[in-house]
Image (cartoon, rainbow, N blue to C red; front, side):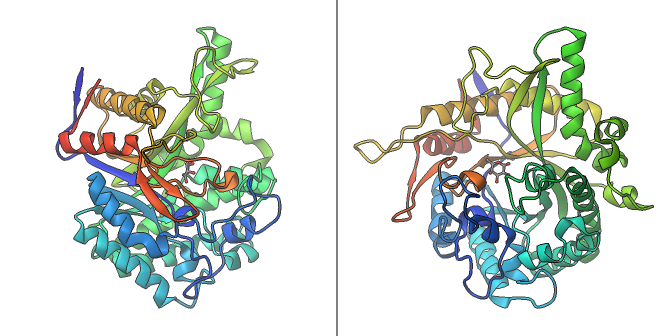
Length: 439
Ligand code: FCB
């Protein structure tokens, strides 16, 4: 079979500031909550930090050469808030802004469309010390930071994302405590979720007030929840799983209210919502980004894990490409959505460098191929998908897992910072060149 994409389809790759930049305290950058968290003993699986990471802060010109070599049409990256405003509010750091200036200019010179994310988790530590996302006023501070960035880069960057995966910020950061800042309190987690949504709405307004014509969206992570059987109990359990996590963000943004089920599921931990908040949150968006990795197979008695016959990635996530198609169709049917970009999709596998110096990663290649195909099929079902960002351009610091998980289509040797395009990357180049997938 041949799966064809339009020549306008935007093929890209994604990264995030803390995961690749390094230079954690250079050029007057402020401390972030991920600096503090990774410097705290016992928080990161391999005991390592993002202090150097992929040293992208210094190696970005070389990385852009590699992006060109891959043939990327777009690149999704995030701005480190404490790099540009070291304490989160107040003093602006011209050297930090200068870095993003150079990065954006170099991308444009290479004919690569920049997609900028304002928040991919590295909150200035000074704001955390003042209460972080638990406090309402931080939402307004975020809008100020967003306006500053748009004033600075809005003439050149046309696609802006407020948040990456607000649910992970709220729940991994404040309920499980696996992420910075490491809270374990449901009351805080749901209040944080609300303030992130509010900050999103305020930021969209602030961005448009500066540059009305640029495109603004948000990136949500969606994790499939499929019933393990046709039994009403399993179907009900799968619906509850979906509502517990996914609709909590989709509904406020695209319907202007929390899902009715949330009041029952979340109970006393429902956040404090002020009059007018929901209207602010439900700003009309130009696009929505979807990050997809896997699904759960749900029964009334819990998840089927492992799923018999399924393959798993190094993250312990089931490989299930058809779940991407069904999620896309589901949200397309249930909400009135703007155009969609797949803003992250990819897989971690143990890679080995072969004798010829190449990295043969057939499992990553297959993973991508099958997810591209399922996306194409969803488009055939009527879903308006405009582009695709592979996670990730480079092997990088995978949050609480440190450097133990490699997601890149480019290998990074952390000792030498040498980059090598993996087989999956070479295959991707061919997909981009021909706008088609042969299966
Ligand atoms: C997503 C994150 C991204 C990366 C992938 C594997 O949740 O947005 O930074 O860690 O997972």
